[in-house]
Amino acid sequence: MLLFALTQTTRAQKPDTVLIKNIVAEANNNSQLEPLAHELLDIIGPRLVGTPQMNKAADWVIAKFNSWNIPARTENWGTWRGWERGITHVDLIHPRVRTLEATQLAWSGSTAGKTITAETIILADLPDAAAFSKWLPSVKGKFVLVSALQPTGRPDYNWDEFGTNESIEKIRAERERVTEEWANRLKKIDVTPRSLAEALEKAGAAGIFSSYWSRAFGSNKIFGAQVKKIPTIDLALEDYGLLYRLTASGQKPKVNVRADSKELGVVPTFNVLAEIKGTEKPEEYVILSAHFDSWDGASGATDNGTGTLVMMEAARLLKKFYPNPKRTILVGLWGSEEQGLNGSRAFVEDHPEIVANLQAMFNQDNGTGRVVNIQGQGFLHSYEYINRWLSGVPEDIRKHIETSFPGTPGSGGSDFASFVAVGAPAFSLSSLSWSYGTYTWHTNKDTYDKIVFDDVRNNAILTAILAYVASEDPAKTSREKSILPAGRDGEPGKWPAQRKANRKGGQD
Image 1 (cartoon, rainbow, N blue to C red):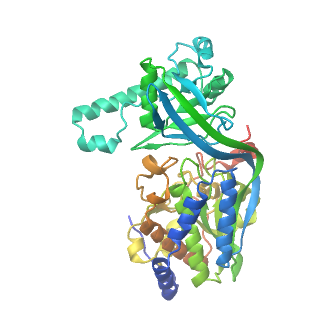
Image 2 (image 1 turned 60 degrees about the vertical axis):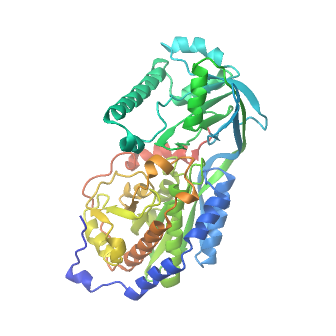
Image 3 (image 1 turned 90 degrees about the horizontal axis):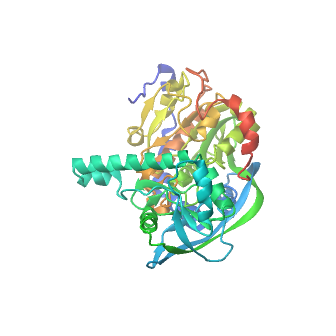
């Protein structure tokens, strides 16, 4: 339900309509989103924490902010395992020749510039851990297939459109059976994905093949490897299925594999911060928030290149038309969100004075779609100030947005939660899916061409206006909570034990 009621008091404090019109006109007529996206996503590429590309991206974004007369800097918060991706190339050479779609997983071991020729073997279905120990020597010198064989490569929407009721029910039951049986295969031998990979590495496997399908055409989830010494490679569903079937039928397929990467030792990790200094209340803050890092199976376009671009463009618009804000406007582009909100959590710990004086934080991190939902994150009076701020947003943008109050503090899995967990008013600008969860999120298809620029422009305008009206608001936001934080994103009392490890992450 849309709620935009204004009290008599707030009606007297209307935003500057000329300023807002200027922001909208500049965003639509002189948008920098497309060139920024090309430079960040096509030229620099993915921004995996601990890689040279993350450093290049930081240099680039700081130069951009400086070109707009917005001072920017990096701020180190810990260290990480340094790693650099090289070439991944996999060919099936027996019983026929085919080049396979393959991606080396982040932080994987390499083939050290060589091409390895090896047979494949499927993780056996064994009765117990003792049988697994006896089977392990058979993996020596082979690539081990450690994912289940999917019964179909067609996404659900394809089955729903074209399948009969009988075939739909059949394929869903088959998927459930395969998933359950593979989980039982691991359970019986008492391994986790990590302990399995370590056992295979120790047994002398040439490498590991996995396939984590996202249930979309040609799209696989790409995460980090579990071991350092041997290559772990994700294969597209189609090619993984081919190898699996050939192996299962006794064809003894052989592959040529080259997977290059470099270990770079322990490297610093950082957030990127940019600032438009406040004039009347410089010690109070409005934060524009997005995580800067990504997985590196593709370009990190919708996770979270689009969020980064929104905050950059919003800052550019604000600097041009609102160069002397009442409160300080801070842009936070966080590092290592993908490994547990590490950059934003470190910022919260390191800057209690900013957190204590936070007027609002606006975070965007769920894809390229236009913002359609804002909830109050458990703040009891959030409906008053969020609706007041939204009243300054043009109707053609505002009409798409549903609000819900007071909302739930523990909901969501992005950087705003680091602030909510300590009682600071931080809010997620949640957007339309555009198949984010099934197609681009953490996959090898998260590339420039998946960006819907009209929606991203919408979000940049929205964010800039929200930051402006929140900065100008005479009242400081209430922090009274309806319920206590909970869940993965909250519980600051749990932080001390894990934060020390997270500030020195990725090195085990």
